[in-house]
Image 1 (cartoon, rainbow, N blue to C red):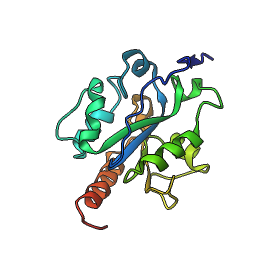
Image 2 (cartoon, one colour):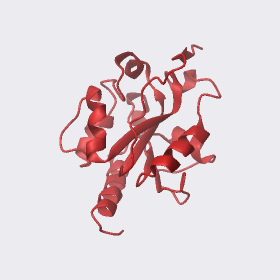
Image 3 (cartoon, rainbow, N blue to C red):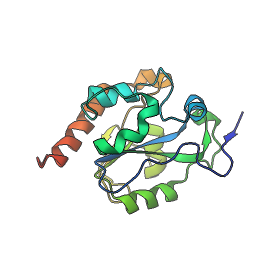
Length: 177
């Protein structure tokens, strides 16, 4: 097993600030994303197409445009900031749930959305289903979404992402669910 470590700096920088509608949290940057220095950079990854399809961005963004996301109320981070690669390649202690909790508490976004069941389970400390969770992470509404990775096609479901986007849009437009 190969472990990829990005020395003493983050593989990808956090995209976090106050006032975000949602922060998407992955497990770790993939090898392609680490190489290109951009979130969800593999062409088979559905993340960017999905953000546009569910109405969270007004146009399809390229992975290199990830710094533009705060203008749309969106942030990005990962559970593992110092390692990259497939989840199976990551060391057991790669996920830093405590650091993630501190970031989310500090920036207090409208919601956090884990972009895989593996990430949601790791952060919440228990098995989860998809969708809005009863339990909040860092005191914000918490979603667990099917992974947009091409390697996770068998669990892909755009409807879960659309339901999350609908809730976020309703909350930020003043409409209560």
